Amino acid sequence: MGSHAEEEKLAEMCRKCGGKCCFESITVSEEELERLRKKGHFKAGKLKTSQGEISTIKTTEGEPCPFLKVGKKKTGCVLKGRERPLSCRLFPITFLLEEGEPKFYLSKYCPYFLEAGGLEDWMGGAIGEAREELKNWSEGEKLARSFLHKRIHGRRRLVEID
Image 1 (cartoon, helix red, strand yellow):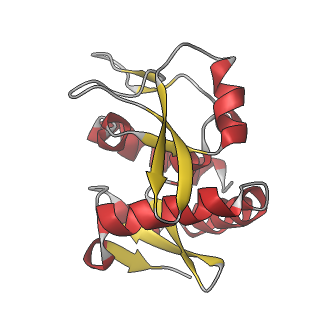
Image 2 (tube, rainbow, N blue to C red):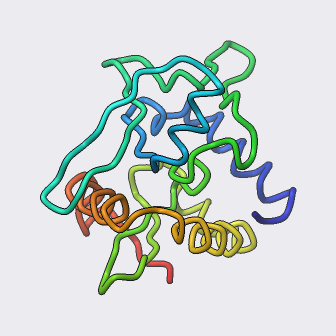
């Protein structure tokens, strides 16, 4: 997505945080869900909204995503690169659909969102990759994820980036 140095900085931020975002249900497209099922056992669900529905990797209260390894020496996702869901590869970037097109924001839910916002090569690469990958998502998936993120984050918790 971006330079190797920037990706390492982002990974370090995630390690320091402990993967706070990995303790929430993770939205995934149907295509991602099928790919992830080959990688391990996890509970999947569907979130239905008035805008459509989207699949999720469900987490249990207080437990992280099944793909997050938490240890004393190292914490991180066992999935590498494009194996990871788009939501995970993007975070702390998120998107909302506005006039049918994705608009990208930094989420203040991430304690390092300001530092991540300074990783310009990574951000540009992530957004470009997301625009391409979202072409494979159904309209219902994009609308449902956008609806959920508006409810979760609200406009006050988002910083516009593009």
